[in-house]
Image 1 (cartoon, helix red, strand yellow):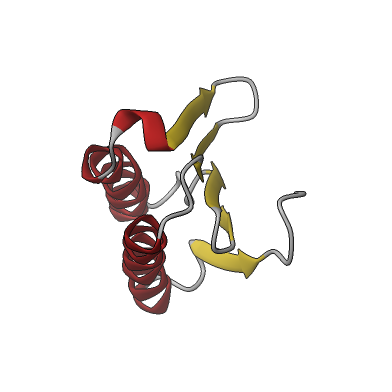
Image 2: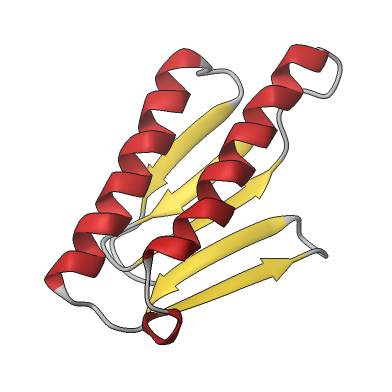
Length: 101
């Protein structure tokens, strides 16, 4: 299962969809596409974008917490939320109260 941890300052995605059913690999592809393409919506200096191959995770964190950056982050969350409604067994969103995972 893919887990998405988020709040108004960051999004962190980890895990993998069910590899047995090849159609579920499309869920992983969709999540990766959302995360990788979303970084282009920000000024490079306004975010931290990290890929951790050890724990199979991608994290996007706001360095500049401007109104527009928070709106973009919310839009990314909404895309992931929509995906979770279509594939609830493959992706789960968990809202975090602070920056600690």
